[in-house]
Length: 163
Image (tube, rainbow, N blue to C red; front, side):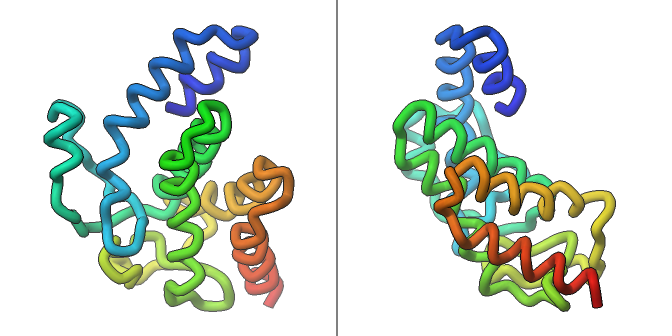
């Protein structure tokens, strides 16, 4: 989705790229149908829209970097299309992260989507986690500095890294 949104911007607003990003967003929305709102890492893209709407809540596992990437992409898609469902899906994970266990602002690389608990008891600012910390700040900037939760998470993480 990020590539399609980038192509939309770089093409000067070619609606084909935005339309394809919106179609992909619709197909990926079931990934956010979890207890916490953290997206699961795998979703069936083939079901019809009616079948996707009836999909039960599916909890599993997520990777910090993947969840943060989807957050950025969905809130951007929501802003461009004016669709609140995309924006909401992109933001809900940040709120869930506020309640997740952390150590000095750093989070486990892998979290369950049911409760936000660690399934990989590993902290990292490298692989599988690094972009999440970067996206906290970017999410705040992309919101015209109105979404305070990602900024608070970022500040906590940076303060923890200085300890």
